[in-house]
Length: 442
Image 1 (cartoon, rainbow, N blue to C red):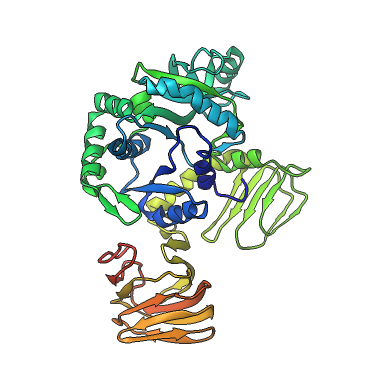
Image 2 (cartoon, one colour):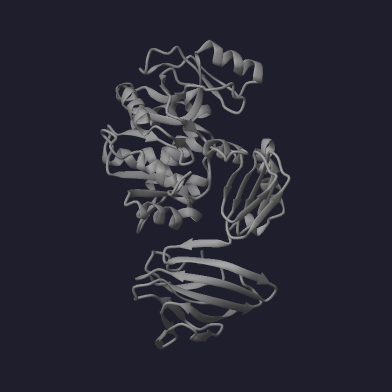
């Protein structure tokens, strides 16, 4: 939506919020750990980053955070914010949090009901009788309605969009979880009891967490408890749940078009186009979404953009590599971008940050050629240590012990050409590592 990512914007909503600590808890997938850490570092946001071994929906994810917070403060209150929301009026949001605080301190499980601006069939609803901006008891949670029902909800004034944001004490949430879904409570408690604190990350025990059933907070707790409360929220909220929603949130030009990147349009209307690294040209389109990334291209009718999940399901059935890794992968030392991959060879661009160092490692199936194209690199190859500048290269044979370091002031860019009978990322033996990954191959 702007210069910062949505994750960063979510964390920054804590600034100036009364009672908020300087450190937040972020629950994310193992594969996103370095990207999340880098994002938070850019905005100087201190955080404990909890790594889910596998996704189990929101009820277990928040339970991990609650167990962690309770260790520091039995009376802690958690403000739960998904990282994919847009909130235009931060003051109104913080005022709503303040309105719900006393109810949360008194043991209520508070959610935020968005004051609806239109009949919306894509959201669940919360039924409650509004009393100004105060927290009020929830009468019921309602599934996504048909259009006629949604119209009656908006006209009646007692139904609010379910935002998926929550405010509650750690004990209140964990007690409710233990009462209504004890198997989730037990699995998360075991997982956090046996966790490993690894450098910047909190790693719950994988076996215990994978045994945990998946469920949302709404189904697991909120729809069952008699202590659910709601605070109305009117703050320019959107969950940006589809490309069409992003188009609406960002607005368009005089023809209703929204473009980002290198895009040429001719005779297009109400169209959203995002180009990451290539020129995208469009002619005579109406109500279409085009999203070009380094990984793939999506073309869809705007009204059907949510159906991309059907494509993702099909990609998973086919065990496609696109569902496992992005072309550009972030690591604690920087990133690598897979430029070309065919049978027997792969070409990557490595970017190593100043002061960063890759693990000391070796490979069983591939050799590597490194060419420095920008900056300088310090290379370890078996017993030799030497520097490479622009247009200088070296060869790493199969089995060579090697590493790249950047002790210099500027990022170093290296073109890496891999050759071998197997080029998977798990063909790696880490002998030493500055980021707690020694002995791993991921």
